[in-house]
Image (tube, rainbow, N blue to C red; front, side):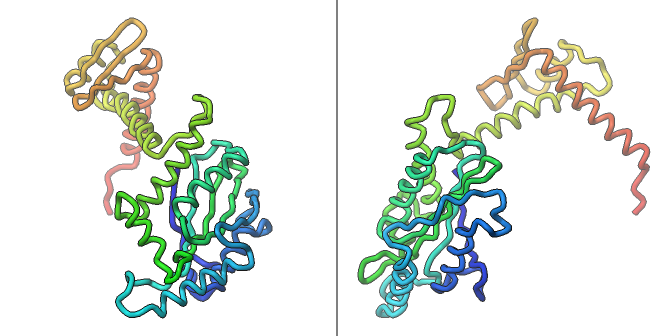
Length: 286
């Protein structure tokens, strides 16, 4: 699940920092406004509150900030003046979360991200299949004296990196949903998405390697195997398939011959078209 901090306050003098209850109120009004031009293709599930209510949220975080500002000198880590932060969690597009799954994700994240701090949150459900969970989290705990929420999280987590902790919380929420989802409806985690992208990049690099080496020669299976083996790849072929393993990896990439030859052919055509365009363009005399 993607997690990012989005620090801005629409309509406030300082558009990047949530340094006042007025700025927080502007932000809540903005992302709970279905009529705003940015929300034309978004359905807003409604603003909700965590460890606070609609009328006490701003007062609670404002009073906590004032108390921390007036604390005895030297007590507690330094504070940069933000009374809250805007965090967005976004599962991969096209997942189609149910209302119950959205509620469970929000509760799981808030329980870990704001264990003793007030927060306001709302889901933006996009027509493009993407669901975004917007959270405005108070930057202080509710106790007296108030403590910095982020500092508390750093102390309780295995890592000192706040955003790393926040992302791990998002992945925990996805794992919880996946326990109740059928195998074919599993939500991919960020590590799985990155691995899939690397896998796709690796697969697509093979036809490009062959096309660059084969030049204008005919697409012959024996020549293709020779090119790959010459670059240190392990090649196994049958009448139907070609399987290639990179020098530094144990996993093989397997292609049907028909698909592989088509990919190499397309790479060749693209390279020849580029060479032809460069020839007609002539040398660069700038």
